Structures are given as C-alpha cells and as structure tokens.
Length: 295
Image (cartoon, rainbow, N blue to C red):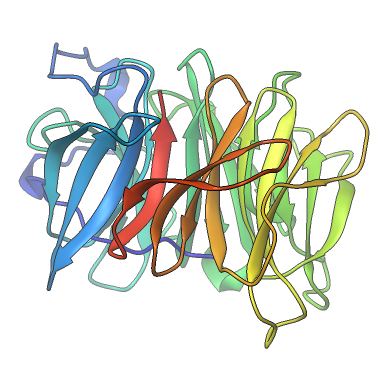
C-alpha cells in the first residue's frame, strides 16, 4: 500500500548513485522519544512533524512540496530516506539531510515503478529498499549506507525490513502473481522464503527486532475495515492489535516493541498496545497521513 506525499528539497544537489562515502555534517536533529509523522496541509504541501508518544507536544521539521516520499529517519535523527518520482514516472531512492538542501545522495538507479518501503538497519550501516521494479516485477535491494554492495532479489516481495537475526521480514507476493500477498521472512539473497501469514490484502508492514507488525483489509477487497496484527517470527500466530470496522493502516512499532502507532483513516494517529487493547489518540488530525518512524 503506497504512502504518497511530497517533500521539499534542492534537487540540483543530487549526485551520482552511491555517494562515495560522503561525510555527514551536524544538521539539526529530530529529538529522541518522538513519533515522526507526515501531515497534509493543503494543495501540494505537507508537513513533517515529530510528536511525543502521548501527543502533548509537536515540533515541525520540514515543509513538504515536491515529488518525493519520506520513508525513514536514521539513528542520528538528521538523515532521511526518500523516494523521488522522476519525470518518466519511475522512482529511485535518495538519502538527504533533514533540511533537504545539502548532502543529497542517490542510492539506486533502478527506475522502480514504485518504491513501497525503505529502512535503515538498527546500527545504521545498511539500507533495504523494496517495491515494484522494471516490468512490474517485485524488487528488494539491500546495500550499505552509501549505496554499495547491492544485493538484488526479484519476484519475491514488495516490502521488506531488517530482522535482528540478519534475515528480512517481508510482504511477499506469489511468484505467479495470483492470489493474495503474505507476511513472511527470507534470507537477504532471496533464499529460504517462508510464508508466516497468508492472504494479506492491501497490506503494509513494519519490521523491528524479531517482530513484524502489519495491516490487512478484512473481508476481502470490498470488505469493511483494515486491521493490524503483530507476530514474532520465531513462533506463535499473529496477535490482533486493533479490532472493529475502522481503517487502521501503516503500522509502526515503538522502539521498545510495546506499542504500535497506526493511521486511523479520517481520525489521525493512534497508539495501541502491541498485545492489543484500546487505541489512544496522539494526533487528532484527519489530515495526518502516516508515521514515518519512531525514535
């Protein structure tokens, strides 16, 4: 499920794929213990905010106006992964400073049909990006943080994130492109693909530690709401995080894995215990689009 928005940056600064290990100046940082959120603010403009886990304080960090999607924030709180929509309708992955005007580096040169997810590893040294590649074939690429040592896996998954054991948690697509997606795991080279939860419809995943949280439409494509589930990849079935007829989507774990933040369509951002429970509103704004990351 695509997160669409637009992000302001000086694209004249874009450099060649890889970046050559550029240094990282000391840009202003998003504070720790924050939930990073994108909020629609009008025609061709959104805002990048961080809020506390209780929603009692919000800080604005950027105005979003361009053809990019913010996908992750690094450990320093100063660097962003963004997908850029090019004039030919394809996308590629870039890393930029939080201010969006300097030290912009192109990390892929694939011409993705669509980038769904991109994530820094826990130690910040690696990146995984996933989506639809050329010829409408799903594509996952792992790389070092400078865009080097790329490993490509085609035809398996459209979303991916790093697990603590070195594997990838994935939103997988059937190889014959029939049937519904699945939540599962695979090695970084695409081997040993395992489906853990079948029949995931219009899903979105977040991967952290040894856990995956995901959303899926209930009752088929024309069904009512979308619900969120969490699971431990080493055993045990998925646990319902949300319930009811609301449309809960784009789930993201808190750093301690005890909470999940979701976009409840038309209502804003909610915090829910990862074991399931009553959702608590932390951003009462129908224009809130999704949580980028938690710190």
